Image 1 (cartoon, rainbow, N blue to C red):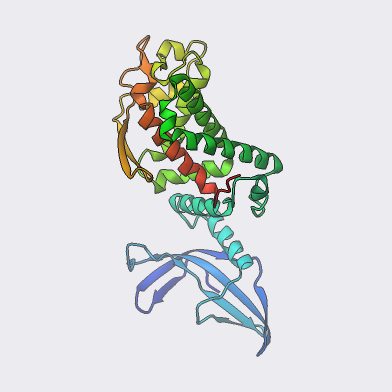
Image 2: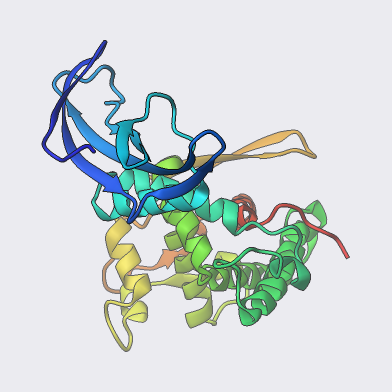
Length: 323
């Protein structure tokens, strides 16, 4: 059996050292027609090459051993491993820090996206998610209501007729959309998606999808003095009227003076590409007003926001059933 610290040599790739070994707690007992009982003992080995054979390092090796009649021998061919043994090996490897945090974040995002997908937006669908990641009954009820509400608002906001309605009506609907989305982000699998976006999507997209949209929602909710998107403003004095260091204050201090972030979105039905910029406050002091419209324009900015929000939410959905 292989041991940490051993020096080995691959026939074509050169010399390497054994750094870490992930093992099963006990070998898998297998029934073989030829020899009866055989013990199968797979491992995952992390190695360090004297000279890596490629940029990908090739640092993980999967040797195994077979024991028949008390005699152990090295497996010569590719191992065939069951789920239970593979999961145990991966658990041991992760606990021994075989993998980088970047790898684990990407893997976690992939697994979360796969396991938490649903088949349509209704209560029965959320019950179909396999344990242990299925939502609770309370989560299922909330997700059903929230997803349905968001999709209804999204459909309305993306229609040309919506932008012909009066400004107060538009503002009310947009406020509800940002509010529902922000509440949905309390659902843990969506937080995993946003974390994964930081390494798998263009720069700032995860921050826009989480921090900026929460910032907008908080302004609208905590300062309910306005009837139109164009009228909404804040300043340092207003934000900190009773306590400094809350989320809105922290967000502006973090992004004050940052360069604009440019985006574009495609509307399939119109065959139209729209370009826009998200602009952060240049100055944050005293009574200097910061207008929401200067950060994000109403029509194009709101449509972009709802498209990005929907992309995030859709990671948990396989199909949508209209009722």
